[in-house]
Amino acid sequence: MSEFTEEIPGQIAAIIKRLGDGRYTSTSIYPLPPDAAYDDDVHPTEWIQTTGIAPDRLTVEIKQRDAAGVHRLYTIGRPEAATETAETETIHNGDNEYRVRPAEVLTATEAIELFQHYYDTHTVPAGWHLREQPEFSDTAVEEHLKSQAAKGDETTARGRAPVADKGAKAPKAQQKPRTSE
Image (cartoon, one colour):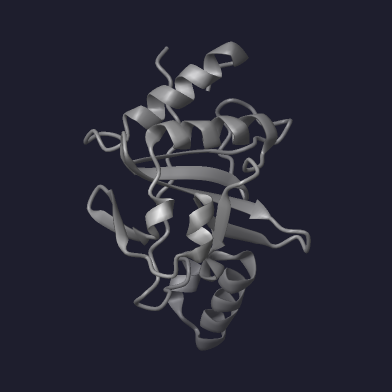
């Protein structure tokens, strides 16, 4: 992102509007530590990310810390997502597909607004529904890794995330927003 804060809204919009164009499939933004250099390899624990095909078939997720200090992943949806019970809509991310609830299928305009609010406040605006994906919380990942280590599973050594049940969706790849220079 630009060092010139007045350019940030335009950069966020440009990146999200290009999703699904064959080159860009997902994007995320996350807070940097105060001492991070531009080219540091940062491993964020909190972020907002989106994938899909702009302008009208995107899903947005946020990973944030709860009051107990556990990082949890949520799919963001319109308020009516709270009453929906089935993930019946498909969002495409390259060759991958993700199932979400109908009210979690967002437009590029909605995703841009969520990203801008997150950039400004590190929160989701009031009125949006957050559906937790518990299989991707810190505690679920930690428990899985401990279980695999106890079994001597070599994938643990390579740092792979847990494999959820067949009904669960796979985590999305992250891509740092790119800017032209």
